[in-house]
Image (tube, rainbow, N blue to C red; front, side, top):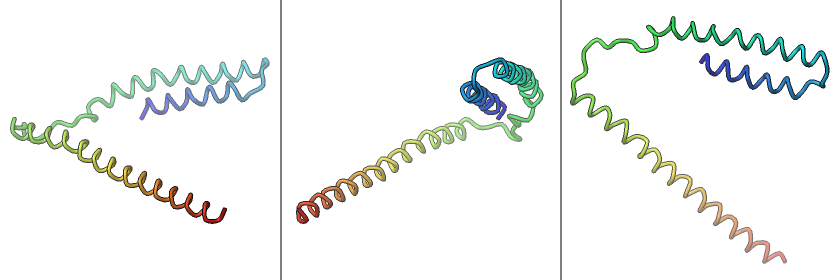
Length: 112
């Protein structure tokens, strides 16, 4: 989350840079904004160091090798299954669009 905040702050800096008319006040406002951004970097670094205990909780029981293999296989199968379903849905949508386009051409020829 902190990386997202820093990234959005960086994007907002460029929006500010290109939206304000050039001049002394624009340079000053950009410099002040950049200084606030520089202050955010150590804050995010410290927050990550302080939150390291909460990011990955420790499990109650040690995992068995068979359970780990089963979980890995399940995780690896999901993207393939979802990709096949997405491909099928997009293919059906493409075919429906082509049928609609062909029907529209026929109607235009009948009207012409």
